[in-house]
Image (cartoon, rainbow, N blue to C red; front, side, top):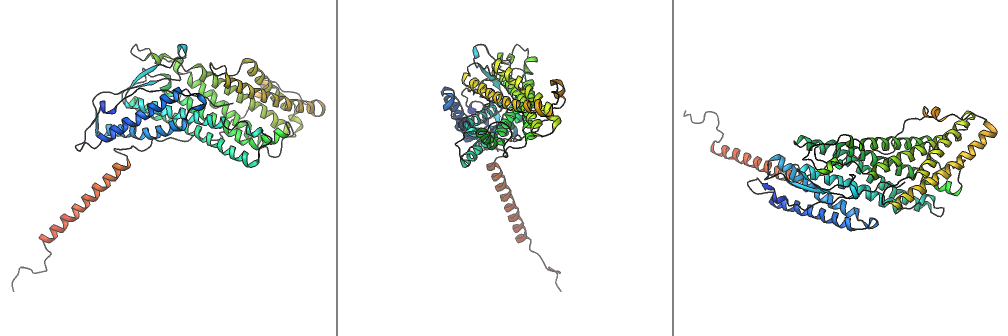
Length: 465
């Protein structure tokens, strides 16, 4: 299954010079304020160009680089405001289009958000979206390489590395979503501006949900990489017995179970804002929206799909164990997995509006897994019916035997880049060091003058004998 495709936002034009006043005696930050305006204008331009570009041609790497340029400037302005080096003439208003909220006619309205924290949160959200979409594009370029019978070992390993790169992008995105939820939005609250008027895109719960979803997407790709060598061998000879290259089966079903946990938790968190909508009449109309149906459907489908795969591999583990008493259990797990996959196939997995190609891709993956489950089920059922003769447990009995999942990859914690100027920047630290060095030189000079005007004397100087 492919990872989630985010619709990227756009933002309105703004000049930091309209509301930022350099409060230093030397007017040290005037040029930096102008540079910050230019960096944000570049971001706005790239977002507008991306909006007009077809999905397959969007340049997410360019957007990531532009955000890498802008964030240090925004951080610099925020630290200078906090230090009193820059004064705000008025509360800045930043306009952004929301893309995660459900709207009539699927329009993405532009909303005005006050404070520098709003622009930081929205910029970081866009950054995480771009990283996730870049990972998706990277994976799409690989194709189903692990099932290609003609691929060489060198080519497969090269594509494994690209897949691992996509995993890294998603782990970075997860760290950014967590940073927004646990740091940026908290600082925004502390600045005296509550959650009233914010869209779901900028709620703590939704960003926590997106962090879990990005990590689950990364785990999904990590599982694919984990199975790439054995997938090639199975493509040559489908079904049991498993090839020697096959990795640990318990690890596989535990990885899938962790995906189920992450996707399920993400969906629960994503639904939280809709049950506690702000009712203030002055709030943005978008604050009364809920998370879009595409995102909720994606989380539901992904959770169900990984649950079916976990049950499949639990069945394969029982069947491959060689223990006679596991024969009926293997059949029971695979019957459960088959039923879940059939329900997904018949229920129209991924009915996201306007994403027909993605829906077809997911249905194809479900059909492939259903075919694989059928192969294993027939094999183990034949053994149980003719050799082991074990009773097939009921589904509720299996439920108690499901273990806890484990993470295959951790999220990458995010920290803001150093400010481009002002307190905390490299330039500021250099100037501070130079000032300290000059003060030390002045102090040494004063001591030398004092020594020359008051020369040391010998014992008895000034006495006449």
